[in-house]
Length: 140
Image (cartoon, rainbow, N blue to C red; front, top):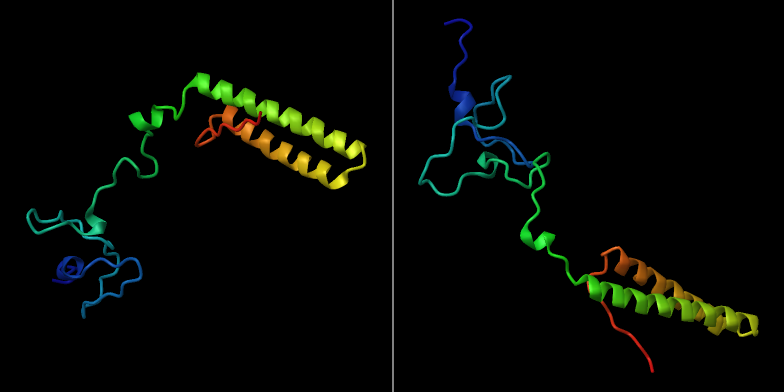
């Protein structure tokens, strides 16, 4: 009997994890696995979280995009149209900003340049397919 390890402490104690204390009065044997190696019993309800096998979202799993991920949020024609519209706003606001600065109107010129920067940033997001939705903004 010397050298034999009693298997009861290895399977009788629940696994430790997520800061939960060990509830068994018997300490876990040295070198024992932290999770049980026995599969969950069928029909006993949902298996504990530590017994669920990793799914496709686990780190290291190959990426398989779904059909919704492959679908683009808007058409290419709409993207080009809105991209050109916002590029036009960027050019108009930039010209207006520098025109106002050169005529001595500092605050309106800086506001126009700030709006031109925002319009240019949104225009870049449209061209790079990063805009979540397309905004149509035109003044007659």
